[in-house]
Length: 312
Ligand code: SF4
Ligand code: SF4
Image (cartoon, rainbow, N blue to C red; front, top):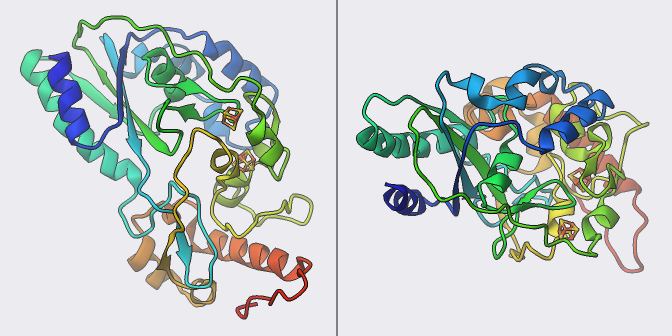
């Protein structure tokens, strides 16, 4: 059954599949200390359901097996018509990845049902309080880098994670979690423009641009106006410098210009991006981010001979 499951997952595009049992993971204590230190900023949902994060068996009564799945980001990175970018995980021209991955996982639960009639399964794509990177690590899919991302050896960290929790007691050969391959490397820590990576595996979310541009409801203020580069949604710098990520393509221009975003009304935004990852922060926040990033670019000193972008 395992090989059929993995083969099917691979056929659907998943690049990593691993199995584990519901349990309290060693990483839980680190997570708990992180929450206790307030480094989760105002993402208070991370503080809720701590018992479930401690042991996800409660997410599905009778849960016997957790299947961790990794799916690659679409490639390449995308840009607006005037050369501003968004985080790599975000593809506003596609349905939100939560929906896409759930649909793919539904096909895989059919295999479980076939071999374990009467079993029940629950699909989680960022939708349940589970330490998903830690379970993927435990299941032997990859290791957690100093940038806190799950890294698949030979592939890197440009991936989404999904879990299938099931009451089926699937037999699998336990694997040793993959040891960190970061070694002496500190490129991600050095590259973070916000000093949000305070040390290896240690993130102050309140300074992280991914939080500031997506989760923070208010506009980015002068106080936390950290150098955003040309990215107005999320931030990938701690991944882009990682030697495990080899994708260096030039990118693709499929987004409207920032001027178009700024003149867009709510109806148009919903029609064009309402089911995409842009829906989470919403139009007001995206417009506010764009104003901030454009303002930063306008203030940047020019190199001799460099032209300021016309759009500004
Ligand atoms: S996403 Fe950006 S701001 Fe956040 S930790 Fe990584 S490099 Fe720093
Ligand atoms: S950049 Fe270096 S230290 Fe950071 S996650 Fe990648 S390998 Fe590890």
